[in-house]
Image (cartoon, rainbow, N blue to C red; front, side, top):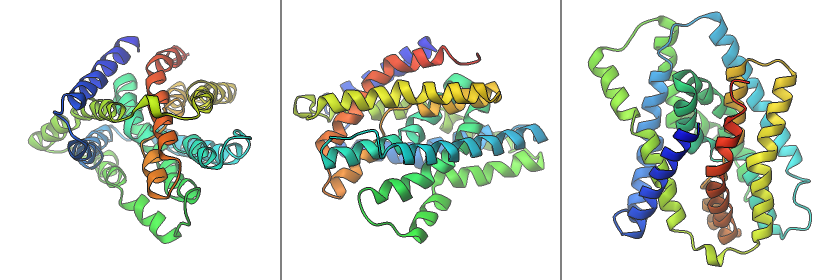
Length: 299
């Protein structure tokens, strides 16, 4: 885990340096982000479903989905009580950051890197409730939401479409032709490197000197990166859940604040500088906390 985390940190540094050197601009970052979400990650997901289908896989997929929904409902409920005394704009950002992490962008590549293709398979399923809450309860913190548009965004998300496609070879037992499988593998292999470089670019765009409310940001980071994953681990371990599902659930719960926090704050007159600080600080600290959380894996 430490070796992988060091590798990911170096990839992040590459992105940071490229941004500071002007090699990757804001527009370039948007293009790279789109490539990760719309192409690289879906290719990885499709290949992760190319496994021999059996009843145990179906049961584990159902269980990880249940765990995901239980986690999201608990996060939604508890987020109301975690930040008393914070300014309203900052409180909204932190509530959103508890409900919605960077699991979609950073969690899936890490699940594949740490837990292999099986980990990515279950992580893809675990992200379904996260994305549902992101565009419903999460978005509702900033503005009114439309149920129909929320469902449409979820069902048509490129990573969800990849799940639909991946289910075909998994259930039927058919396999892609070699040339297509190789194309998916080569394209999907770009996911981790490019996604971590993009995070480095985002950090380079943040002026840490202008971050307000650092005390609240550190408090949020403590909850997001340490307290929440430890609670998830304790509950699932006590319930006797399969080790792989515990590892996936804990890893997804240990992710830092997602970039959508700042995007929504900026779009709906929220505290965008504070949201950027949350992303910066929690992502930076996750370079230390994730290897420590990884010590729990397989236990």
